[in-house]
Length: 433
Image (cartoon, rainbow, N blue to C red; front, top):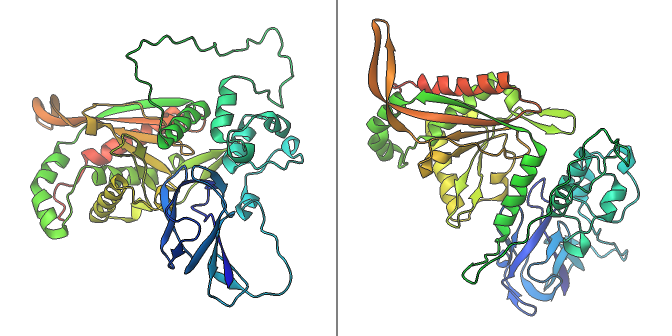
């Protein structure tokens, strides 16, 4: 009999751990190759994990709801193979030399650089995100070691670190221990006691809502948000869509919405203003060559997820329509793959879906800008012509751009937003499908 080690798989470059949601098999059960054994969840997406080979589950090492680091063995499977040990379904010859499985994933070696004052000996695991936040906030390793963690084996999670920062307990390594009297120090007020009557319902956040809440708080803590607005006339787009939508469905079996048109305009504007397509790492600006546009999608649960259209600038309107419809449909049915919600460089959120005319969206970190598209409304508007101005009924909408004022100033943010509006107002109504 040979032993197969089932390990927690790598679900993406930035994913360092996953939560076991449900074991679909128990110890002693027989499994076929590629048969689903368990369901796991990361802060990105839920996934099903198949068996690497046919055999019998002899040992389950972690229980449901436990958090496990990527690369750790989570179960043993015995097979009929002749090889002595198999890991992830790959036979390993029995050389007589015992090997030790590392307790941490090799991906840890790719973590962000830590300042010299933070490089002290530590046996505690810290994810790249936790290390990066600590670096930005000048929290030394000695301080991190003292923060109580709620993760597996006391691991410090992003939620723990954000709670620590919110309580204003951190001490910058570049600042004196006792601030000068002339420098005001802000201390967060204690939370007031809450009195609840008997008819109040208390609802515990689900796992995804907790992650979204943490991500939103972290984004506001990280980036000084500024929001700019423009109102644009999209009458040509509305009339063009009304004219071609039936033929589009007949030809491509796809329903065309306004979202692909918005994404096309954003991709063009990013090519004109590439310094919006960046991220920030400490004091470094990371300029990204690929234009990967995320689109916020509402789930039936009320939560949000952001699937990403990779290289959106290389797709025409038909290609964008296929991508938008496919990703939106699989997002609603929880069938997105981990790589389909990663590596976004800019995000669009359509608040007009809910009848809102504008919004002030929160930046999807580590990006530096996000666009909100408002509802399209008929309004009286001034129509400028060479022979004079007139008042007419037009289809108008607001675009709202929130951007990170650390690296995107008003001139860049405002010009970029105006360029998106220009591309939409200059939409070619004579293009064929």
